[in-house]
Image (cartoon, rainbow, N blue to C red; front, side):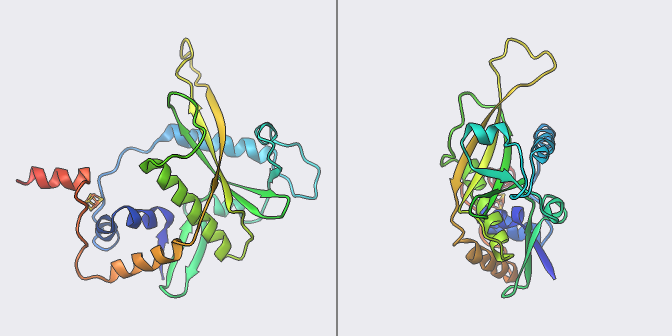
Length: 233
Ligand code: SF4
């Protein structure tokens, strides 16, 4: 049984050729060192929200950020939450038509008054100005797809999922007078209304791509393939 991570499914969306080279021929696109500062923010946020995690019928203290945004939701406990958050396990769905098992690891899971799951993803960065919405940049479009794949995975596992998920953006302040061994962040909670209708087609498309005998064409404007092309002239 083959598995396909959320990241690799997104690689197929970005470039079927890169996906084919990676998955079928095991040729990886050059990678960058991991963003370990982001992982530290993720780990600390998980610990923080875990303190506020409570079953809907239990008395709980709302997280100050949810209070600030007047969001009537709570971080909820679930017996499988630690698996769903694990990069090696994640939420999984066996797709019968392709035989592929799709999986991805969420950052957090909240629940609204209607009993719907709310998918939450943490992002850390350091940009000038406040980040108030997801725009149409390559990065933000990838975040939107990420949210939609998680929503799809939970739905395919039989859970009720809210169309609206949240990106918890942590923006490192550059305006402080000095570092002093501390980095302060501004937190914004950005709602995103996902639409999962495309995911099924992408899974089938990725599967069909892997059955091809030749790798698909490279994108014209990709800096990596452009480099190889120019370097080999
Ligand atoms: S154009 Fe080349 S390097 Fe760029 S994403 Fe596609 S296969 Fe990968």
